[in-house]
Length: 462
Image (cartoon, rainbow, N blue to C red; front, side, top):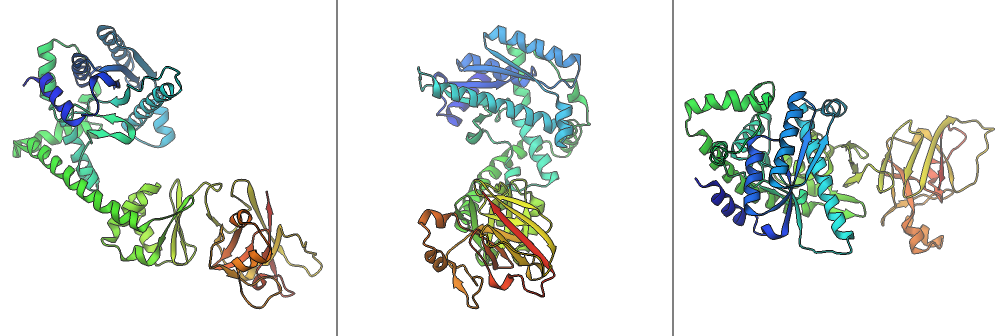
């Protein structure tokens, strides 16, 4: 096949918005045949690109050899070269991940930083041209896709994993123009054009999962099914189309569930419980908030759990609050619903506020302050975890000294608070009962009495 002609045709069909005259690419070049062929094809097409080489410092002299080769390649094509050195082993140890995963994260993070740097420079330049579209580009090909889908399948994956490597990720400004082409096509092109490249000796080792699939599993599968590669590539195309239909349906359902509330999201419990299929939709909903698939069943159990129950990811918490599921960021300064655990001594909330908590044994000789910024409550009537949140319409409590409940909205009107002051009012609740309108009044049901044994003392500071 004429690889250059096929590559040009594929580029026009897959990336019609990226004309060679108005695009600048950051091309990852390892020195292997895949990236060398891609560099040659882009050069012949007249696409502007900068070469980027990541030295992961994993193979001693061989890593240095690869870098020297890529430097000579940059001179050959007259291209700018960026080189970055990584302590990959240390990164893998610090992040508890495999070496290959660490290398991938380091490389893509670096590429993204470079692209953002280019965009920032363009935006602040007094001589803006507006002509350049910046993308990172990698040399993944069809054989890589086959291996990836098989690894996803055996590891366990959703429909997205079966759809394989995506040719374009616009959100990350990443394209993979070699994805339709087989490895043997690239090797044949390199031989025809007399292109030099380097071999990574670690590719022969089966200690890495991908190499095991490439060197051992796939050859055995081909003995039984000679057309296995072609069949898998056809299936990937089908799965990719199925994934598009699937994702469209999922997005509509998830968007119908989520109700934005400031920096948070809320979902009615009954509405969430009625969606079908429940497990799939729950996973698709929570994955956007940093949760992993193993937490899906726990979140579903939370739908029938007790008020105040929660599940946490690295970035968010899903909190069961009455008839709602609250998805709140873990950052206290932006969250509008914050859990307070037993034994916690302080909690930051809002832009500048802090709640301090302590407990002590009640004594009849102890004197309590009348400051609205402090509250003393009977610990026996309080159930943890507590929920610190913005007040909302429909809230009510029993103001200190009153035996009847009062709507919080009416209470705030009586205080003659301005609209902006009302927007900054927080409440602390236990088991759906308000303990304290923070900075204003405690609930009469939780006041300290003569029989009180343990006191929860709260103070509020800005």
